[in-house]
Image (tube, rainbow, N blue to C red):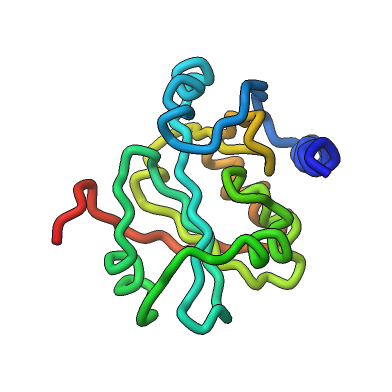
Length: 171
């Protein structure tokens, strides 16, 4: 499934005329490993978190700079939901067709029913380019941020919400 899933991402990007660069590498399942990939790619790799509400009825994909620390309370208050937690692997597979460690906005192409709401931290919007996985964690894509917003998201019928998460986790 991994090769087919990855190829489907490239096929979609080609079809909608997006520019991208692919870097193949060993499995990268955390941000520490992504740091060296980021240097080689020449673009910041975003952290992607798949979240849900307590009832597991609302799902969110958060894209944020890799160096930011995530605390649910900051996001929950901006989205107006009581409590967020990490969504289970079964939801990740069913909705995005992605396994843990490979979470990426590219998975939105598999969310045909728009059950996942895309949330983007404002600091990520400042970067001209960003890196993300093509639904597998053995490759990383370098994408143009504007093309992602103006070509990819309309192609997969998703909108996005911008949030402002703090740079340092403060209690």
